[in-house]
Length: 342
Ligand SMILES: [Zn+2]
Image (cartoon, rainbow, N blue to C red; front, side):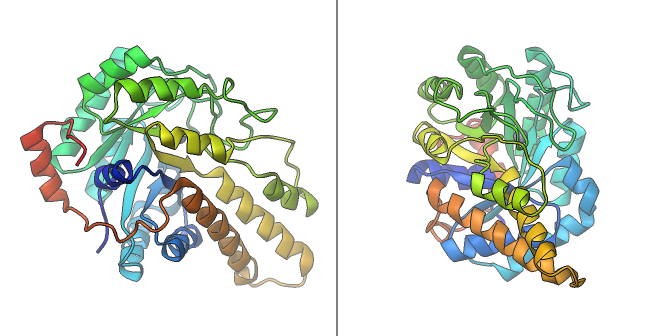
């Protein structure tokens, strides 16, 4: 069993000065693609499920897919994370299900759409921290809002994170990791031209990192939307308008300044869709789902491997043994919510 808490995984990443990709899953092929990539590159990894994913796959299926992954890939340290929990209740059910990490996204109200105020965010996030740390589970909070709407999450409004507020938020909530808004969006349509450092507001990451050097920062909406993946979709009958994501080199810049978790979802969606469209076009007489799901899985694996190498997590799978949840709970109790990075 190599299920690890996200806190330990990110502490290790901080010690080694690398970032860790957090990849979203909804089904078997995605879990296999990500775990195969982790094995191939010897990477620790974060697998995350949104509320939409839990609904799509059903909690029990998701849980057992993850349990199977820890059996089939025992050498890989994997954290199981609830992406964009909309309420303490969602986080509680994830913890009961066996997730080792939860995100309480209090930047939005519990409809997942309406921007909240700072005091609401502090209150619900603190509530989740108290509950989660008692079980040894890691908590990610979010301050500021991202653009775009995906899986029914998001206000569509961009509110960049204020560094002063970030300091107060971390002090008052005790979160282990903080998602910051620097101008990125969820989904495929992030930017209408290649973003530069100003559009991306990378200075916000640098400033927050200087003031909160032991808080693990999280970049959401960090797919790179590679043109070659979009081109495959369009070449085989798809229709994706010209679009830009977050360049990998900018993510690497973030990793130099305290970014430890990098959320990637869209790139896997694009890779799978292109591969399936291509398979359909190449042999219209095929009707065995394995005929198109196999290349889709391989295309996702390829993207994940490239990100694992780029983020620096490759080669670190066997660096450490997972600390059991019960031991993490003791550490939080004895050292307080803001553990010092080991
Ligand atoms: Zn997100």
